Length: 274
Image (cartoon, rainbow, N blue to C red; front, side, top):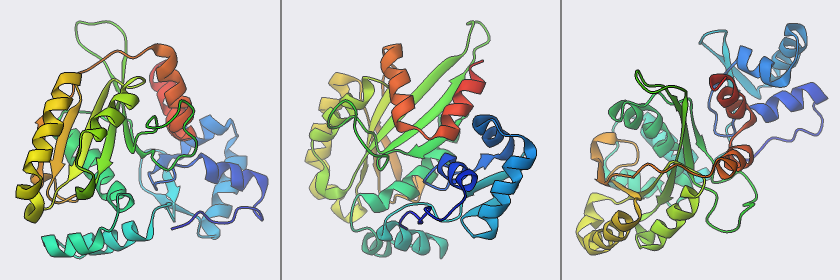
């Protein structure tokens, strides 16, 4: 869906709407109020106005949550979402719904947030589609497709530790080593970086050599490699190479967060690190 026309909205409603993640992720009312530095009455007047206009949807959660009612995504992603809602689609149905890389973002983001996080024992603060977020301040290949954020603590190690992991998403037509170098560009400001390929079962044999080449190059640079036979089903995902953790330059990491993540997520990071 394309972004709605906000030109006729009151300033507060426009500010609140723009503070919400573009991919439809939910944010709690208290977090948004703290980010916007508004009192309760001002916040809820703006929120209720957006709800009445159908631009924002309410949800259940601590303090109540809100999200964009119409997250920005491609028409292909819309078609794939409809396919997934109707149960467990077969390979042919999935392939018919996926026509480009953009249509992979939302289903893969959802799997990363739910299944990937559980498998890797990650308590993720946010999982955002960052590919469509605008300019690339440091040149090409510096905007990741999907970014996860986690703040970790350890029993015997003092302090809080920020992990920002990136995923470069690729369709079957883009299985080559260039994906590794794109992920390397992300990792200048991230702790771990992965390439995530959608490879349908009927193309796996033909792409095996290309996947092996990518895995070899990724291993040399500490980049993770994951393949997905079905972008919506974690049971078909395979981690071929584990990403090594790096400690990026703090200034680059700070700039990455400021340029690529939503205002709501930036506020959550600030609060969690206090």
